[in-house]
Length: 518
Ligand code: ADP
Ligand code: ZN
Picture 1 (tube, rainbow, N blue to C red):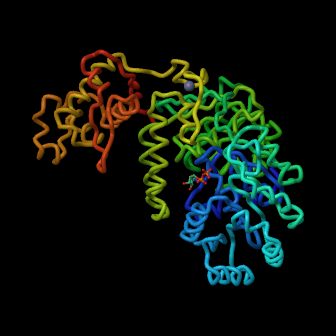
Picture 2: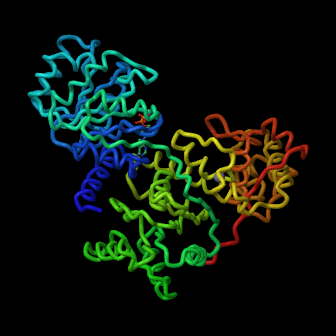
């Protein structure tokens, strides 16, 4: 945790937030961005959808001068530049579609130092006059998108990319960074060699962390559940994440009172206090760090054996990153997430107080996180799918679902039948929430007005909460018994749902948690 890296990281996060409204890195983005900031050549492999563009765009906005991006796809260039401009970043592109006038205008902008990012087609960049011209501008870094095109081993070799090998000579001291979704090691090494990169950092994102065991627990007694995990790992290093500073303080106090070696970490502490607690954790005078998400930036402790989330994180990006601080040494480590439906409400309240322009996307990320918690699918698979990859094995062998630890209801078929019957009785015209309310027997005006309080399925699950029934509906959607579709997210019964109604197949439904004793 070099202080320099820490400040670079906060700078990058600020840029991410300011220009894109994102408040966390995707896997490997932090490392990839740091290479750009430190002018260290790099080859970055991330799957499609993994967020490669941001790896160079965000640092380019932080660095002095203009970043040059080589991209082979003329159509994508325009889209990217438009997207950047809509984020308030001055960007432009040069390719064969531009008129002489347009090109001159951009040349003026470059000379005036007005551009942060310039997209260039590879065949332009090898033009000696173009290179001379760019040399007169201050080039902060060079990014090469779809970099596998330079390798004959790749699936899309383009001869014009070959000329890019002169870039390092043309721009001495400027970092050159290659990005691709092609993962083979041969291609990676060929890219580095063709571009004549100088001891490049190789960053390869496979998003799965097979040595992590994921468990998701419905909260019934959070502090007790946290203690159980800590006790399982007596004397080992671990991190407990809480949603608020207040909870961090309270949890730390209670842990210390029970004799655990714990220390708090959050933005409300003084710099010295924070540095001290961090140091105590790194040097293992303290076993447990209780923290808000502020903890972890620039930290690299390899033998963290467990990470507990005492509340639901606000996105899977956050969860992946925070839980990913466990087991960096590759040895087994445990990640336990304790959640309740109330966490969703808490986060929405916090988000309502935040930036309204990012509210919708923040809520969408939050819903995906909530879905992960309430799901009965393999956790490893759910996480990597979210980031655009997949797992080969059917069962990962390292999550509560695959280890058969999750607590399922005994009569899932009957409950499933009740839910599906209600969906049919209301003619498949309503969403999850409405169906859940009918099933618990809500007196809501809309239901009464529609006459749905007269249905035989009305109140069939009146001993359950709306939240529980909503969760079950989500699980039935996930397992393919129900389908959510259309503008209004209406729920309908699928062919396998019909089988369920005939008791030919069995769903898996989570047992609701006991009411949380706070
Ligand atoms: P790639 O080029 O690797 O296929 P993109 O750069 O197009 O991926 O990013 C895929 C999507 O992920 C985009 O919509 C992008 O805005 C989004 N994204 C990238 N980084 C983040 C982040 N840190 N937080 C949230 N969304 C992100
Ligand atoms: Zn699994």
